[in-house]
Structure formats: structure tokens, C-alpha cells
Image 1 (tube, rainbow, N blue to C red):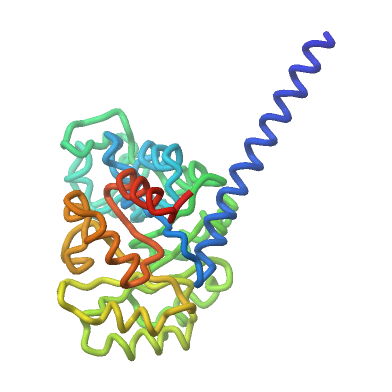
Image 2 (tube, rainbow, N blue to C red):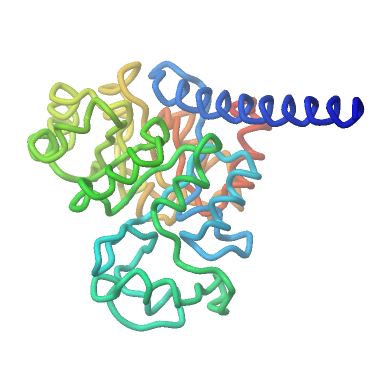
Length: 302
């Protein structure tokens, strides 16, 4: 009996220590995100870590990102016919499942009958998760960047509040600052909000300055196509020690050719340029393990 009690106490201690360690990890990620002077580079897995044979926007993709100690997962949100936010990129289920049609025309029960496809298009046993399932999977483990959630954020926030995960959330949109203040004003002191800005636009400098004055975002997601553009350097000067710069290395047109494919040939001329020259402190990637290994080799990630 005494041995059983000792074992039980040990198990309780291990569970408590594990939960404490998880909470500390999220706190550390959040602390870096909120520090405009940080030299650490945060890694965001696009649609979850789906290149490890898990379908995009699946619980398995989130879990794979957690196991790999990635800092954040980007997830796409749509709402079913009966009002449930679910993870889906396209708005239709045609590409990613064995079903057909718009998710907005389907009930959650109908959506849950579908099987997700992997990156090769093969059917799996994985199902489309609800936002609630996804946030509970992420809770205490990893931060979450929500895309396509702006127009349904009242519904989304109810799930965030229910799951107690507001500290994990980075919400984003490409809407002007005035619209964001009007539409999301009730939530801006509860979650982190980040604007998405195409800096190829002719008024990019003024737009970014005005946005920072109105909302002072923690970070700006910056997109540009022209490799010869001088805008990343100009935006860097505007935001230096004020907000973090987030760049997307998913494909060439989002980061002036400094994408994951180019990084496979020469990471210093891809990731390195974004980090060293343009002061990127958040990179969203489809190749998070390769990026993590690169950052660790440079002392830029734990």
C-alpha cells in the first residue's frame, strides 16, 4: 500500500511538472513575440506541420508541430451551416477531403463524415477538426495564428473564451486600422492582433506608420514580390524596436524570392537575408524543421 501511495504521489508530481513546463514554454514564446527588441526568430508552421504526412489543418498537423517544438501554427477557419468554426483552408472541401461542396452549406455532422487527404492527395483516417478541438490540442503547448477568421470572429472568440486560450491567439487580417478598431475593438485588449500588409503598395510607408499610430501592433505580416524592392529596408527602419516583422517563406512571390525552395539551395541568401537585412523575427514556413535547424545553427532559436 505504501509503495502505491509513493507511486501515486510521484505520478501526480510528474503530471504537475509536465503541465508547468508546457505553460512556461507558451509564456516564453509569447514573451519573445511581445518583445520588439528580441533577437530570437519565431517559427510558424503554415496550416500546421503538414509535410510530416499529416493533412493540413488537422489535429495531427498541430500535434506534429508541438512535438517538433515549433513556436506557432497558422490555421484557417470557416464556419459550418449550423454555426461551428472548423479548420479548413479553401472554403470548399473538394481539394482536402473525399467530399464536395462548400463547408457553409454543410452541418458539422456532415463535415465530420469526411476524410482528410495528405499532401500527396491520399485519403487518411483524419477528420476536419473543430476550432475547439484545435485550441484544446494547442493549449499550453503552442501559439496559434488564426487566418480567415475576421468575419466570424464573434463566433471564434466564444470558442477562445470557452477553451481559455486567449493567451495563445494571434489574430490577423488585411483590413485597414479603422475597420479593425470598429469591428474588433471589443477584443483588441484580449488577443494579439496583427495586420497583413502588402508592402509593394505605393503608400506602404504611410500605411504602416498610420497603422502603428492607431493600433501599435505587436507585429506586422509583410508581403512583397519584387526581389529588387527597397521597401523591406524602409519598413524595417519604421518598425525598428517598435513591432516585429513577420515574413512568409511559403513561395517566392510573398518574400521577394526568399522562400523555402530557395533556402534549400542557400539558406543564408533566403532566410538569412530576411533575418539579417530586413530584421525578420517571425517566419512562416512550409518547411519548419529545416528552418529550425538553420536558426539553431545561428544561435537564433533554442
